[in-house]
Image (tube, rainbow, N blue to C red; front, top):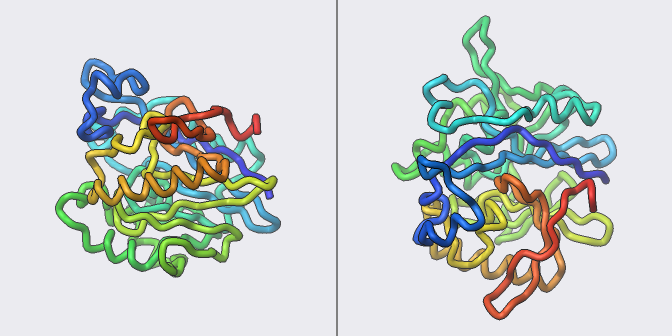
Length: 282
């Protein structure tokens, strides 16, 4: 098995929303804001090369939305999904599976592309199966008012229409997938979000998605204002970060603009960031 970092570009989000009740005077020390109170966020995906299987975990925001839509998020940086794949010698046609941690637009937008000649939406990876879970699918296709702006139907309904959609079976809060790795299910950010837990070189690597967007979010009380059930997020963070600390997991950060991976160390204040590195350095 080989793991590859796939950078798809950066965007900006409101710092206050990203840190909830934590005061700006504290969170800006790790995630500095610009004059509009916006902080830099990566959209970092992971490519799992395992035999004949090539699995992409999340897809970034994509490029099919309107100019007005993108103007709210200030996309920037030289990276794109296709450029990152090309640097590794791959093409999107080589992808056999696309695993979507959840269906918010910045995680699954790149799964669907717009065919300009017909104006139709279609899967951006023609040879891939797309993986979510049935409980989250129901949540996303019948969105609550709080999350409605994050669930854009054009980002995922075409997957069902194409026949390429598959569901991971949820057995409690941890399941084995057909893709060669485990997933942890968490419900605080959104219902039934999935965190891939991959074993390699005798270590476990956890793709943190939106449970832990950046190293700046490691302290337990640092919970996003976007989370639908913040007290559940608090409990999930406590349990997962303690296990990650005890078992020396590697955490892979989807949204941290600088830090790709880290370990955790135990302190009197709870888990804190340990060694920081990239996959290439590991």
